[in-house]
Length: 147
Image (cartoon, rainbow, N blue to C red; front, top):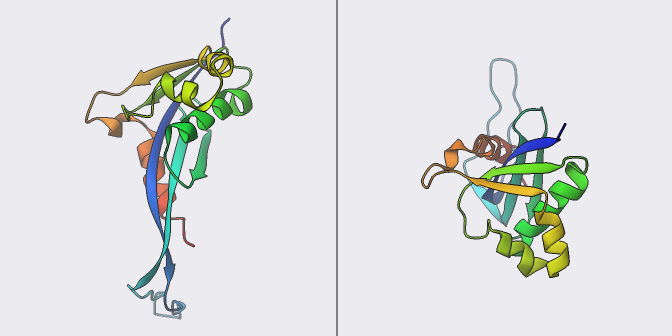
């Protein structure tokens, strides 16, 4: 029997922020108080993966969101995360870097072909990237990040 995996994939740019003042801790009858001012600490990009049929989620953090970054994520998905899968069906939006050409830009042709042999890209309709299950994961992960 063939081994197929379905993985939802999405990315999200995130602004990193830090506190300018120490939060006041919670006390009996009083909740923790956090000042609204913040210090900007730059930005990063989150590449989020979510297995559609199993409880598995992964987040790769990169400085930017380039075709080469996307290609590296796809190679890692096949070689590290799902090495036993015969095919990996990747559900994602229609961003311009989400193409087989990104892998040929990042790797020699033989390596790009090796990676792509196991990947099967499935795209959501335009203006419907919210259908990718990872969009929710991106939003929930953002709240856990500070610098």
